[in-house]
Image (cartoon, rainbow, N blue to C red):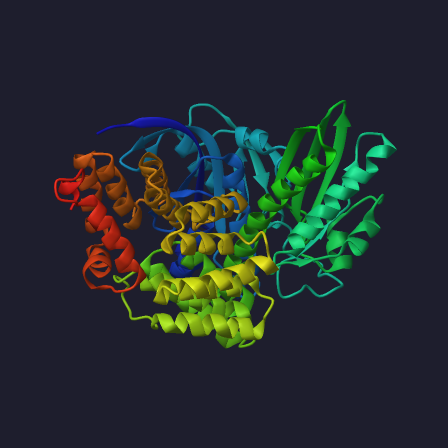
Amino acid sequence: MSQTRRLAAILAADVAGYSRLIGADEGSTLQAFKAIRVEFFDPMVAIHNGRLVKTTGDGFLVEFGSVVDALRCASDVQAGLAERNATVPSDKRIDFRIGINVGDIVVEEGDIFGDGVNVAVRLEGLAEPGGICVSARVQEDAAGKLDLAFEDLGEQQLKNIARPVRVYRIPADKAAGELIGIVRPSLPLPDKPSVAVLPFTNMSGDPEQEFFSDGVAEDIITALSRYPSLFVIARSSSFTFKGRAIDVKQVGRELGVRYVLEGGVRRSGNRIRVTAQFLEAETGNHIWAERYDQDLTDIFAVQDEITEAVTIAVAPAIRDAELRRAIRKPTGNLDAWAAYQRGLWHFFKVSPDDNILAQEFFQQAVDLDPTFAGGYRGLSMAYNQAAGQPQTRSPTAPNSSAQSLARQAIALDGADAQAHSTLAGARLYSRGDYEGALAEAARALAMSPNLASAHATLGATLIFSGQPREGLVALERSIRLDPHNPALPSHLNLLALGLYFSGKYEAAVEAANRAIRSNPNVPLPYRWLAAALGQLGRTAEAKEALEKAIAIAPASFDMYVRQRSGIGRKITLTCSRDCARPGGKADAAR
């Protein structure tokens, strides 16, 4: 058995008083515990880039590559459980105790061992219900990065651990991110994510630089306002906080927003540094922070570059924060927006089973609020995705329904650029309607020039309609605008396709391999990898890639190659011909 060693942050969790709960009501406890894991714990681990190593009855062992990710996950888990337990009788509440350690671990066949793991498990035993205990190294690594209160418990002698361990405690009321007893904003929150961009602080000590710091903030306000899914406070309101000592919780209450972006500008000689941080107004917790250093050759060009960089980073941060909020809610207590967010989480996992769950949540959003465009748009997206998944376990609506649902979303909100982008995809993938798809993508981009999904759909349409070089430009713009999009593997697959049809076979191989590394369980990238390898004369590798594609989804291969008419068949047959010309380079890949 092969073993590897690596440094990792380990989170150990179990249910406080589990035996008592089981003894009092075994059926209800098991049902509640299962629901918490499926609907809450597992998704939260995934959001924070964790790997669930194993479960041990009522406990979990999770590995993270980052201490910050592990602590954020633990804090969000405890916050969600605290909110869930607010409506549950005290004798039936399920509370977690969590321990976190960072250290060297041994990895063997997916499992993990070593003192790093053992210490995390012992720390879990010291935590109070709803609380978190961490080692000194975790506390040191997190200092200044997370807004959490650590209480020093001193050195503790842990069972079967040779040396004493200095332990820090995050009490239950602090671990929950101050969600308990929260003060609600004086202004009601809008029905979409809301943001206030505060004036950036001029840290240069030079009054002449004030125009630059104000310009950066104003340009970011303008750029974010182009996103139809966001509610952005106007400059005239957010700049009333200029020169004031800022409390983000107060900003959230006074402006009625969920998120606040603030920053500072410092100039030294011919260099300029801009810092930005994105916070949740209700809790004051940091969501994202970044620093940008530039040579000040052209002040307006630098201002544009920094504006674009901040905007590109903030939009995904909002999406992830909204998803975390939605996952904290019990399924029986979802509103339309939360149901929509839950649907998106399953949708972006790009599997048949998750697509079915996505459809259920999107339908729930429609049922909860028939005037909410997002529910119809989400269903349209899910139907489009399901059309390419013949292995889906239950029948989905025909592709024509994807178009009608997208049109319903547009009828409810004509300014919804995302709905126009979704309609473009429905017209492209259901009937190969290139002209209609191009028109809708153009409408979406006219409304929201930075809408990454519209650039992706435009790129796909141009590639499929015989304009691969133009399509590659649009696709690369989409990836640049949203580099961490969960749909990145499908965009990389389209990139490989466009490169293939442009005759750039080496680049197509690299793009296909990137798509495979992003998600090795999707068959399409293997097909384009096989085609490009065939053109390069790498016959054995091409055959291996094609066999992998068939093994992953034989029904999908059968549908696209042997049965399906329209766009999928046209594209795949083109690939098949190119990969199997008589006497050609890829004859063995057929």
